[in-house]
Amino acid sequence: MQTPLILDLPAGEHHICLCSRSKNEPFCDGSHHGSRSAPRQVQMANAGRVAICTCRKSARAPYCDGSHE
Image (cartoon, rainbow, N blue to C red; front, side, top):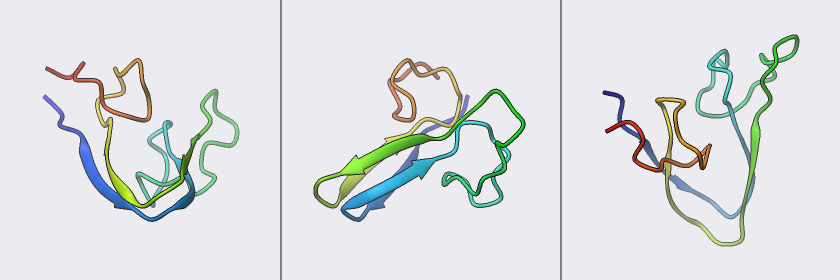
């Protein structure tokens, strides 16, 4: 079972890797180019804690929805 990655993100725009190729996971570094995957943009109006899916099963990607259980 993989558990979510809990992050405290600052306000602003973030790009979360969904291809698992990034060397800066969970953030996109452009490694998805040439794949069928693209990063998810996350816009944070305020700083906050988020649970990022690491099992790749979430219907709410990039956020965890408990599908790993």
